[in-house]
Structure formats: C-alpha cells, structure tokens
Image (cartoon, rainbow, N blue to C red; front, side, top):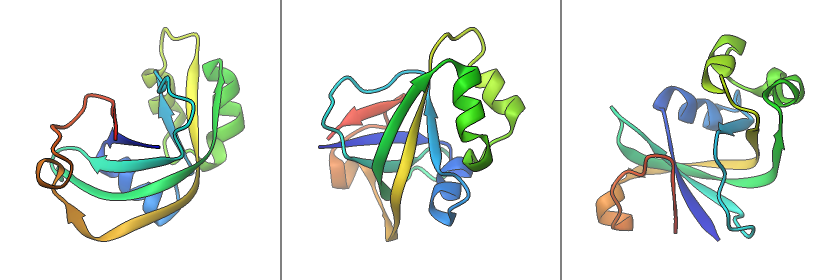
Length: 122
C-alpha cells in the first residue's frame, strides 16, 4: 500500500539527491502495510515529484532517533530539536530506494486529492 506525504521542497529534493536517507515525522500512519511513499513537494512547488520505498520505520525518543540517523538526516540538529520539541516519541522513515519522476504530477488531476497536512492513504 502507498501513502502520500507532504514534504517541504528543500527536504523533498534532498531525498532524491541522496543526502537525506530519513524522513522524520511526529505522527506515523496506523496501517502496517505501507511500503511506498509518494512525495508531494509542498509550496511553492506544489507537485508530486517522486516516490520511495520504505526500508524501516524507527520510533524512539528524539534523542535516540537523532543519534541513529544524524549522519544521513539531511537536516541540522537544531531543526530536528525544534521539530521534536516537547515530544516523547520521534519517527524516522528509512528510505530504501528513491525514484524522482521525469515530469512532476499534479495532485488534484492525477490523485484527486488536496494537499494533506501530513499524509494521505492512497
């Protein structure tokens, strides 16, 4: 099964250039059979730009997640700490194989969706 994630463009493009091997989330999907993430690059891009396979989903304290992922996080420690401030649990989606589309897709036309705040099941 697939899920569509809204990701800020600066981070979305790092997934496809290989500098970001983890996508961090405060909340994770409830369905256990998600294998693929469709990437929606949020404003100002506002297009579906690619997809990646999920290798694993880590969950632990923010401190433990940062220790395990920092070398391939694609973000600064300050950004990470701000994002997870006042959180007891952090999630890190480990990216297995990413594929950027040759042509970005329109979310409404191709998926009949509006941009999700966090994610949407497909």
